[in-house]
Length: 116
Length: 115
Image 1 (tube, chains in turn orange, purple):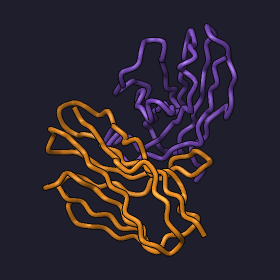
Image 2: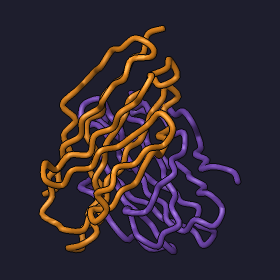
Image 3: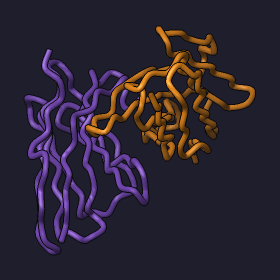
Image 4: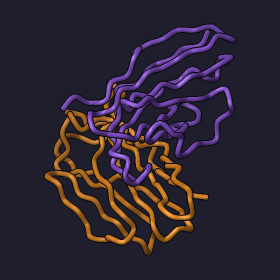
């Protein structure tokens, strides 16, 4: 069965600090997709990134970067120079693409609080 | 392009009643997925519809059902409501070519409270 672990329940930082959100996953499939979503207080999940299991290249988008390491089954998310607007709950998710299972699994989320 | 819309945004029901929630996907998207979010269980996948057919289903009792219309709009129904059904119900739309491995765009959710 697939599983996603976000061990950090809550992280508190001061504006301009860098912060890394951890995500560790378990799957038996060789083909799968990993996602990160942001959920601000309004409740709507906002898509941040989608990465397939065959692409281990790290990705950078502005202040956001992602580090995908299959060897450790991790897909970590770093925010550089955090801002108050980054305060939200961040979810990591896994969806398998083979074996007939298309049931996505979400981690429990990490609440990020950025203080001014 | 308009985003995913969900109606109603808030709903209060009593135990034993039934409820229907609606979701209109992004124009051109043919896949609609439903999720339940609760403090206790987190975010859980309910089901996915594509071209009016249920393509995938999570581990929820038969009281939870859904359907999709020819215009891709979707409804989910919960019958015989229980207190534990109180949750934020999120709908997500995607182009539909790759199931739930597609990039999904979420609506604002419907907050259901069961008294």
